[in-house]
Image 1 (tube, rainbow, N blue to C red):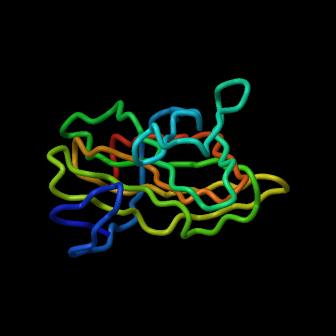
Image 2 (cartoon, helix red, strand yellow):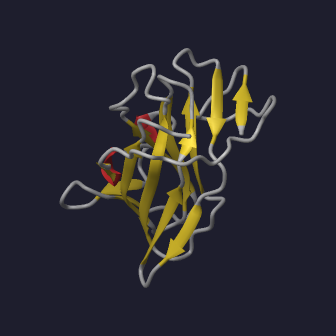
Length: 170
């Protein structure tokens, strides 16, 4: 889906949209892992009194009794023009099993902030005590910025975001 105009990841305003099509990735890069503790609330950090970092500094925990929004920025490592920009795969590992596919979204915003794209609904795999969201290969504009945004259920954890870019998304 493509969001145009004055779109903000703090409160995405849907003005017009087109679907982002799934692609194939012939040459995925090695995945880069971002700790859950790199994720933050999308508002004033001084207001962040509901998310705790674990003792090792790697995961983030919603200690509130309510759903809380969290954003996880993704540093691009292969953003050069001509790489036929896109992601090979994004995997978000979370604690708990009471997640749904509508809780987390993957966005790409053009370098100038003019257009924001929303990847289609992820695959959600649920295990004994954890879950993972997986976004398949997608083509985005060169130099786009990436972010994962979630509504974290009460008492749940975000452990990591794993991203592999693709140098040849088709």
